[in-house]
Image (cartoon, rainbow, N blue to C red; front, side):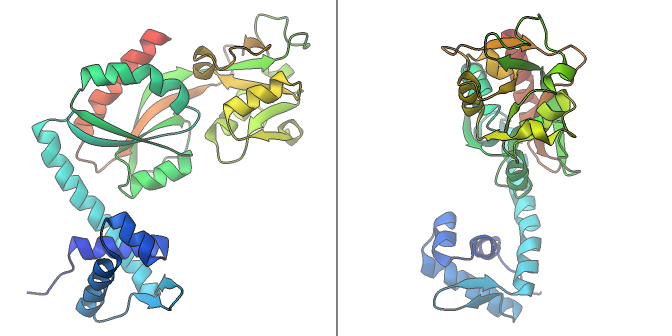
Length: 303
């Protein structure tokens, strides 16, 4: 019988390839650096080829080492899915669950839903990680996350399933006395002529806000770029421009204490869809369906 690499050896290799640093890889694997190094040497001896190029100051994968690490990720993800299937069969809503959430959802949605989640699933240990959509999807596909709360539309890829939780429409925010502050609603065509304060590149909310007012072809309106919605409203309150906010943020009180006017966009303008995403191959689909149901119910109650 052909001797095979162990999952532990493959995990060590992936950790080093991802970080190009033995110390950081060992810390990520919760082992000593000597243990990790010995495991990779055993793997190299088993395969009969070097997988890493080592110097006193650096380490980098060989071309073959990088290819094996890519294949190892799929094997490790499959092994984790086997464990998830077993745990889910016993109690789908018990044990750890690593949930990613984007910055334009987390601060506004999580405080609302956590009490209901704790009450409904007291044995579920929820670990949150906040990051931008692209990085969350990469972590999800790598098996580092079990699921993620995202805003759609976004190209999530064919290996990810999603279920919608709520619709989140946009509102126009401006200082009092602004030419668009008097109407009951703001018209996208009027908003498109303003100096728009938007989030920097990488935030999917930026693209959703641009689409809401058909601003894709108007780069002059994106001069100012913020790193968070809280930054945008502070800039607007200081007279630097106007902005668009998702209703979720407005309802959470992000404008409290600021002298700003809020006007909803016309009904016909697109918003964003809040969704729960997970790997198509995951063995915890029943967990995610139940989680989505309680999240959807809570969001409907606060809408």
